[in-house]
Image 1 (cartoon, rainbow, N blue to C red):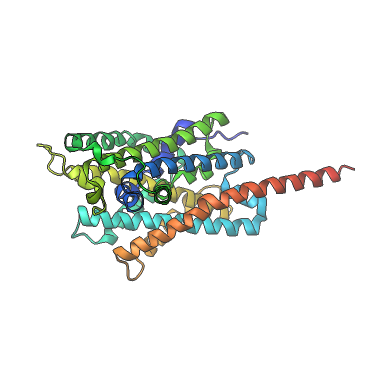
Image 2 (image 1 turned 180 degrees about the vertical axis):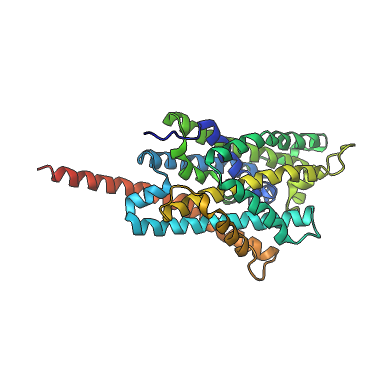
Amino acid sequence: MVTKKPLTPAKLFFLVIQTQIGIGVLSLPFDLSQEAKHDGWISLLLAGVIVQFFLAIYYILLKRFPGRNFYGILICLFGNLIGKILICLYLLYFSAVAVVILTRFEEIVGSWVLPETPSWLIGFMLLFIAVYLAREPIVTIANFVILVTPLLLILIVLPLFTLEDANPLFLLPVAHTDWKKILLGSREAVTAMLGFEVILILYPMVNGAARAVRKAAFLSGLFTVLFYVYLTIMSYIYFSPNEIELIPEPVLYLLKAIPFQVIERTDLLFLSLWIVSVFTSIAAYAYVSLVGLATLTNQTYHRKYGYLYASCIFLFSLYPGRSKDTILAFSEFVSQLSFGFIFLFPSLILIISFFIKKRRAANETSTTF
């Protein structure tokens, strides 16, 4: 009996963009300006090319192992023991990303919306609701993501109301910043676009031609980079080059300046919609982590460990001496790890797979004589 794959390419597209668009969108223009100045949008375009390149690597790797996700590929190539050790490392990485999203979320909501509410309570509510969703089948998660995706249209429309006070000349001269700094800025941009790695786990669940799945993956990366470029340019033409380097969350300050008679604080409206994006990001990372736990324990379903996983993430987010500086330091540490786990290691796995499959083919040929 053939098990029906629950996802369509369209659902994969929405899952990936909702995983990518999360905590980094608010501060991205500021982060890019620290390196690339007003040319940060160029860094974003370069980062988009990098993401597309590694999506191609993911596609080639997954296509070589039909029906297997990345966890299954690790066990197939390295055996049960080493494969599961590597899965444990990826679980730690995905969990660390969830902690970063959670702590940054607590910090932003605590400073902008709920300054009197304990940060742990803010994180607790978001995390356990997200894990409640992550315990469901992937098709349920995908349907929820599709339901909330139209909210992104509001996030796109709201900044347009600031065009009256915008100055496109702030973008000039184009590419005036040293290219070395623009390339350094692309590193920050790539970090903000992380989330596309969930394809490593979701790809075997997609029902459709390989070409359609590949197209959905590439379009999701393209949509995210264009969305980020749009918000970055809107911030750069509203704030002067000197101002943008002093505002840590320029997107929120940009929206705060919108003069609506009915809505006094447009930034809070934006934050309300942004919370949904953060929620779906944590749910996606929780899901791929729970699938990894199920693989480690030889379970066929991931639901069993949901609240245990949530409890561990929540307790770790309460690490001693937590402050804004330590949160940023931990976030930087995890972003450094991401280049190994998301870019370097899958590339090495692809190379290793060629050698191992060739060796197995040679052994099978030799045994026929």
